[in-house]
Structure formats: structure tokens, C-alpha cells
Amino acid sequence: MKQAFIKLLKVKTILSLLFSITTCYLAISGKIQMETFMALTMAIITYYFNKKDTE
Image 1 (cartoon, one colour):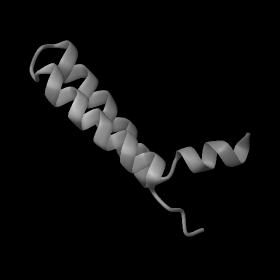
Image 2 (image 1 turned 90 degrees about the vertical axis):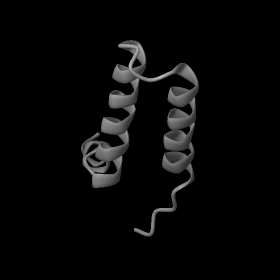
Image 3 (image 1 turned 180 degrees about the vertical axis):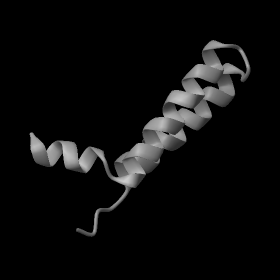
Image 4 (image 1 turned 60 degrees about the horizontal axis):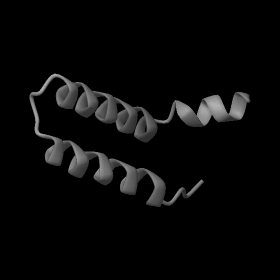
């Protein structure tokens, strides 16, 4: 459990989560279109799950 929390605190993870939350907020508030939201979300998911850890 402790190691999972440490991994969560990595900078890339934090940035990915903040970016996801921000795009969700903008989509819900109507400041960006749904197509833009989907493109950004897919880019985040693709980056996060395809990144290679060198540790």
C-alpha cells in the first residue's frame, strides 16, 4: 500500500491527474466542446498507460 502511494506521488502522475480533472471541469462547465474533451482525455490516457518506466 505504501509503495502504491509513493508511485502515485510521482510528478507525471500528478500532472496527468490535474490535467484530467481540469479538462473534466472545463467540459462540465461548458467552456470546451465535448469533442475537444474527448481528444484531450484520450491523449492523457494514451500517454499515461503507454509510458515506459525506466526504474
